[in-house]
Amino acid sequence: MNNALPIQAGFVFAGVFAVLLLATLIGNHLKNKHILNPNPVINNMNARISSWWVMMMVLLFAFWFDHIGATLLFFFISLAALREFMTLIYQRRGDHNAIAACFYVLLPLQYYFVLTNWYGMFAVLIPVYAFLILPIISGLSGDTVALFERSAKIQWGAMMSIFCLSHVPAIMTLNIPEFAGRNILLLIFMIVVVQSSDVLQYIFGKLWGKTPIAPALSPNKTVVGTVGGMASATILAACLYQITPFTPFQAALIGFVMCVMGFLGGLVMSGIKRSYGVKDWGKMIHGHGGMLDRVDSICFAAPVFFHIVRYFWA
Image (cartoon, rainbow, N blue to C red; front, side, top):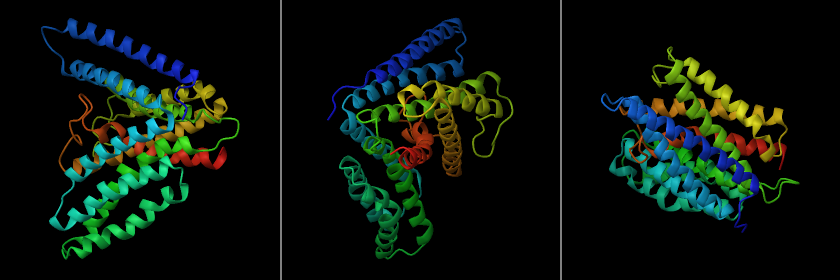
């Protein structure tokens, strides 16, 4: 285990904390300016900034312990995301054993395979075995009402909350020639680009966005916010090429693909929760909603990023 981050990671975190410090100062200034007439947008922005401080400190602490730290961190993120997903979807008594299998069998097994670098089982446990076994467990309960729909919901919850998120620490297992011992930088690159795209889409949308891009799925996402946020995050990806094995053009192209996947993933997850009549998946993160509200874009971007790097560089 490498118990120290590469120096480049320190520069990235220093840059992130500098941005957060600037955002905190601006947020406090705006709050004091409207102290007699509190603005809900400013209050929400300050709540988000406070939560980002906590999240970045947790990421820094976990990444300090390299592969083990990243795997444990995303194990608990998957656990929180799975809990929110299973809590929201409609459940019947006949589903309880299948849901228990997700929490007590699939979740620990998937991250065990990541930790031990058992790629074969990591890649097929949920898309193959879980997709066969979970409907069997539900079927054996004897409850046949909407069995197909119920099984599909549980399978998809396991797919998003466990399988997709486990690709983030799995980046640490890739064997990239001339990049050994620095895979944590790829993980940081992916998270910074995808999360920056989310934040910048929010900022561009609040400042200049007027026309919704998909009002039925996410009324708050606008055309200007989406284009401005994704373009800015793509430029940021190109600027971060030195912490990756990519050229500036490759970093920008991969960053753009991640931004697109993250945006589309956010739309899909937003559409699902709104189909259940709620705005957020939970209340775990102040100002952001639930864990799934924060990592929905990573759910879709991480597997694509992992396989691009594995196919072309590992």
